[in-house]
Amino acid sequence: MTQTQPFVSVGLPIYNAEPLVRRAIDTLLAQDYANFELIICDNSSTDGTWNICQEYQSKDSRIRLYKNPTNIGASANFEQVFSLAKGEYFAWAAHDDYWEPSFISKCVAKLEAVPQSPLCHVLHVEVDEAIGDSRAINYLVNLDYGSVWERTYSLLTAWPMPNVYIYGLFRREMLSKIMPVVNITGGDTILLLKAVQLGVIVGVDEPLHKYSVGRRGRGLRLYIRQFAPNISPWQTLTWDWQLFFRLSKLSQVGVPNLSARLRSVYAAAALVHRYTGWPLSAKSILNVLYILMPESMAAGLRRWLENHNRVEKMIMRLVNNQKALAE
Image (cartoon, rainbow, N blue to C red; front, side, top):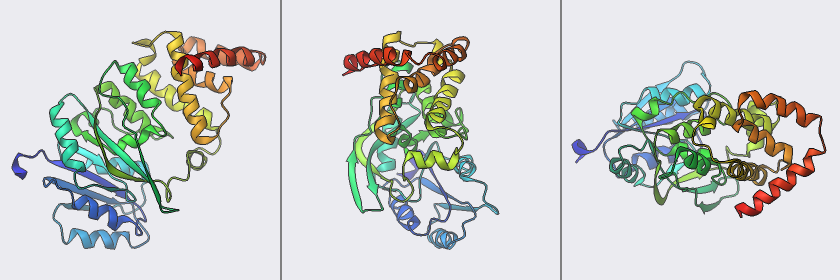
């Protein structure tokens, strides 16, 4: 049976993962899909992670194990596991997550059925390791139909965090066209936005991935404070999305009318407000709207807003009207 199965690579970048790495490896090796390799790149851990991985490698030939002589950083290690992959399909894995046995097999089946799709994602169960609680969350949004703009809108407004889709199964050849991951806050979301441009994203409507948030995910605000301490959260999100739209020229092709733009921008801003508690003001929303404007208009608009505080109430009325239409 393995000879007829497409070869799959799973990349597990790790660093000081001793408390939870056994669970991750156990659930990956327990997949009901036989024809795959598990690539583990230890980023020069200082705890017992390396010894644990060597133990597993000695017992299972599917494991390819590498250790960086020095810590090369999380982003570089994330890319390194992909560069070592040999499979037709590829998935990233996090050391503190775990998977149902049918994760690979069901994703492969979906991708085999839709050859033009670059990615298959699944439903996720969010697990808070800190308090021992879990909840099923429907992250499965409609990315398998419609225009590039419609799929982009669906991804950006996915609640509560669209970047979780990066832990789906990619078609490796198509993924190579949009690599590397941009090394900024939100780089994983930008990669997914690029994937949406390549084709429809298929999904498995089953909770096959357990996504841990308690030990590593203490909130988006903390993540941004660690990696971009000198800029505001809104600046960070605006730069990320602006970079994607500018590079892809999506702001010039297939974008809906102004009313549709405002609804999508409000939804994206409200998403961040609900998840982080950051202020949801007219100027904040316009900061996001800024990425959809031609370059020639953007700088002038920002300067004008700084000098016209009274515009706040007027714009907020417009935003509220769009909110009512969206609901």
